[in-house]
Length: 177
Length: 284
Image (cartoon, rainbow over all chains, first blue to last red; front, side, top):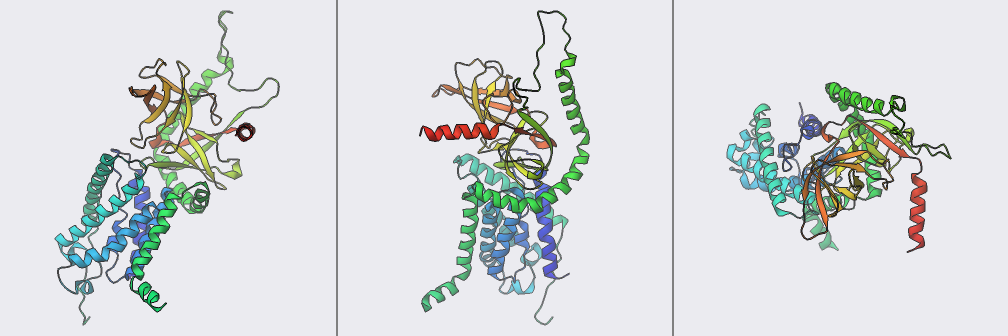
């Protein structure tokens, strides 16, 4: 399956899972909202130009916004992490030119520790920005901090489960092939 | 000029990022009724269909609970029927006026329309209910929405076959209510903390109030008929710096599994609103 088709299917699946599975979970605590959808942006291929990455991030967030009736909220957060992703990836890559050998970020292509760092940094960034916008008019710092931390913890757990369930085989590509 | 183009060329990605951020944030913060109408009309076309499909599946699994609730409601309505009232002795007679008909002019003030809930959130800060009834069925903005258990929200936007109601669990939602025992009026709001509790404000400290008291809709609300249950008092917070209580109310409606609601059409709403608005203008 080509990268394009694969990513289009992923787009739809992540949105549907977020809207019709995760958002339907009864509230456990007021701090906890299970978010997984932004993993789509982390899984986008390395060779995508930064312009397209940012644009895809925006439209992906906006699609979710259409379901949640929150125009711009998730779009803003997704644009941010899509824009920041290449910087973080470049900082974490252990070896020059690794992004040419593998298609997209994963535990196999980047190594466990750098990939986990990437996921953690972007998840925290996404939730901080999202909750900041959401609670802008509210102003209680404890709630802000509690919600960011609790939501990040839940998201990281969900991402771990997803990575284990849907193991992505990353082929090593050489210049000769 | 050339330098400007060079600058744009060099920082194109960053500028593009900034533009998208500004677009997203302005959408978020300038989200007024005009934008809302455009946004929701565009979205309810596609997402309404999807929500409906999903709801079809979800509905099946909740049939039993929904049925039980409707049976309970029927039971309550049967008890209110005038035929059921037997006059045992003439000094105690039961007067129930369910129809709310003006004796001079035969007008039913409130009309009820059943509607199915096809979309519902409770975990966000601003929650909405999507209902499968629209302008084609006579829904318009500013109609009250009640579930079989109690009040649920107010219609804020209407498409052809779908409408969106602002849920009681919305940070901007306000409704005038009264205490059943004392009749003191206050305002229900939501503080955005827990979907299981809403806040009742502006109840004077002179009011006698106990935990477990019933909160009903007030006669002064133009959206709801009076005496529809809103919830029960759960906790009374005695704020020393104020002459009013802040009360935590447990809503009667269970928002996590509401399946059917009634949209209430106040047939005299426009008249009342126009009169009030023109009075306000006159004495400004």
